Length: 170
Image (cartoon, rainbow, N blue to C red; front, side, top):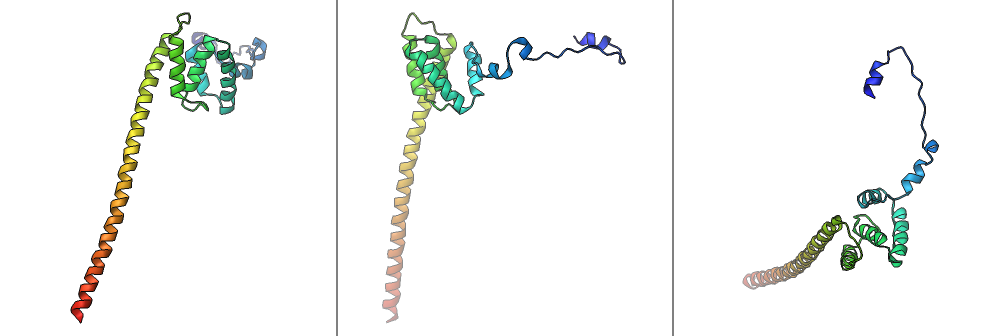
C-alpha cells in the first residue's frame, strides 16, 4: 500500500472513494453498543462502558444466568470482577466461578481459573487489610486514651506545684 502511494507522482491525483460504516451495513453506534463474543474482548469492552451501560449489561446477564446460560454466567463474573463496576463483588465472582467449576457439563476457559486465583488472592489481601485497619483503629484508640491520661497527670502535677508554691509562700 505504501509502495503504491510512493509510485504516484506528486502532481497526479487518484480517485478516492469514501467508505462509510453505513455502506458496510453497520453504524459506529451500533457496533459500540454490542458486546464482543470473546471473553477477553468483552472485558476490555466493559472497561470502556458508562455506569448506566454496565447496569443494563448486569441485568441482561442476570436474565441469562437465571436461564442457566454458562456464557452469561461467565460474563456476569467479569462484571463482578470489574474494578469500577456498579456491582463489583469479588466474593460473588469467586462463588459463581466455583459453581461453574463444579458443573462438569460446563467448559470454563482457562483464563477464568487464573481469574479465580486472582480473586482468591484479592480477597485474602482484603481480609489482611481489614485486620490491619482494625488493629490500627485499636492502637489509635489506645493512643487517644493515653494522651487523655497524660493530660490529666499534667493537670495534677500543675495543681501539686501550685499548692506547693502557695504553701511555701505563706
